[in-house]
Length: 153
Image 1 (cartoon, helix red, strand yellow):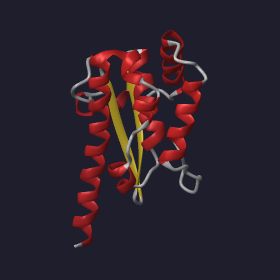
Image 2 (spheres, rainbow, N blue to C red):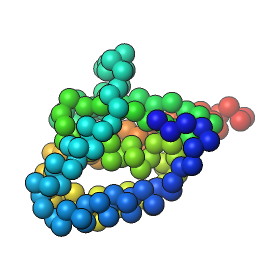
Image 3 (cartoon, rainbow, N blue to C red):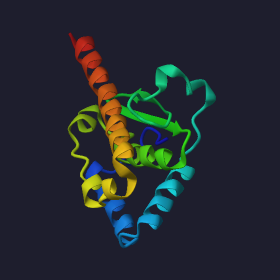
Image 4 (cartoon, helix red, strand yellow):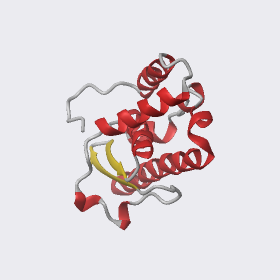
C-alpha cells in the first residue's frame, strides 16, 4: 500500500506503463497470461480477516475479495483471489486506481484493457468478471464521495 506523502502517478501514466509492458510481450497469449499471473503473485496477500462474504466481488466466476481504506480524498485498495489469473487482473486495476482521488477513480477511462487486447486473451467470462471488479471499485468510490458530500452539509 502507498503511504501518505508518497508520490502517486496519474492513472494515465500507470496505464501507459501497463501498455508498454504488454507490448514487449508482442501479443504472445501464453506470455501475457503468465505475466498477469506474475503480477498477481507480486501483490501482497490480503489478511484473512478480510476474506469474507462482505468483501466478495459479485459477478466474478472466481472468488475475489476487495477491501479499502480512505485517507483524505484518496482510496487505497487491497484485494486477493482464489485463482492466479484473476488475482493478476485485480492487481492491474488496483495498480491504476489505488491511491487515487475519489473523483479520479470515478472518471478515469480505463483504456489499457483495449490497448493490450485483454479480452482476446482472457476470454468472455473473465472479461465480464473484470468489468465487475471495475464496477465494484467505482461503487466504493461513489459511496465514499456521497459520504464526503453529506459530511460537508
